Length: 416
Ligand code: MTE
Ligand code: MO
Image 1 (cartoon, rainbow, N blue to C red):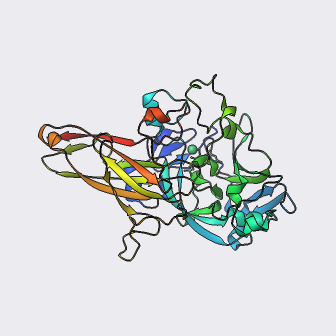
Image 2: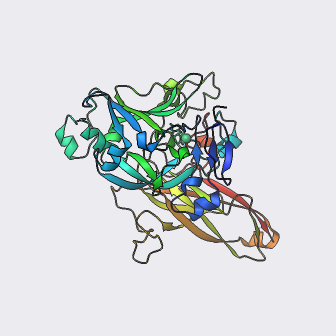
Image 3: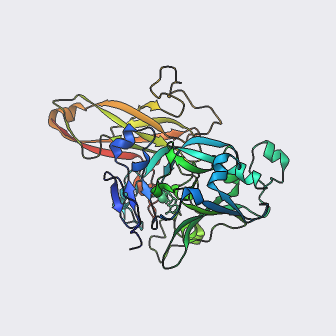
């Protein structure tokens, strides 16, 4: 009953759960679209959608040490007028911690609700106000002026964490969704953290946080709190179960809930290098008498704002690798002759919150062309720090099934 007010959804979602709604973007669309359409952008809700919120009357509360007049109420109107900092737009990927959980679960059972494939990720253009501007206007000062000039995080005297609470809540416990991020990320002018009211140029849809959400680029999706109710500065992390007992990568030794010592591990913030093959879809059938080569296409992304430098593809389980063509990256290659080459190396020191799209045609191997069989292809990406992805699912397996970023494999069937 609590979910009666939930919005209508696009029928093409690959639904993992209806109450709360957890739906994945169709992979063909993920591949075709540079900006993932909002009406099919993956949805990860923990609770019913709070549907009573209206942009016209909307306010959120800002409080904590260093905030003038704390607590203060800030309306969406004020944000849109630019009273809390210039309005700007930025592309950023959101990826759920559970993206690719289904692969991990196939190795060994995981304690995680939705069996996501590789489609709980999307890239969008977010419009709003940068949180560091808002916090500065609200009175938050860095104690070290030099650090400010250098764009460094605040020195964290009385408040180290930015806690964000949503309007959605548990009918039983009355607890609103809540998580936190380090204040340094929120105060970093290059950290990209925004309060956004538009996604891809239109007001946020109810499922994506209408009327206002936090967007924390480069961090695990769960930090981007939807339906924002309150932002507060705090000396400690959020004490919620979502912060303390959920989004953590536990060692293999804690393979049951009763053993899981959540306090021993920090919550996930920045996400590791990720890439996946979107097309052809696993299980596709290729008729080798009709086609000689197959185009493989997919995405690559890294958390922490670290640009992707390249994507490698292997058809022999990682013994040899071909280099994929980066067909699109932010500011490059979007169908224009004058745009910079997306394969050009990213600037050292630059940040990237968006993804890259890649492709590569592979010849059907002669053996398969002759007698048919299973064709297994995998990909891995590198970021600017030379981090890549681990080879096996077993090496990244964790009890909650989070941050799965092993080489991504697809098996397709070849008919001779
Ligand atoms: N914010 C609130 N208030 N409630 C939620 O359930 N889910 C989080 C995050 N923000 C959530 C939330 C999780 S786990 C993810 S992955 C992202 O929102 C998903 O955002 P999306 O549904 O817009 O794709
Ligand atoms: Mo998530």
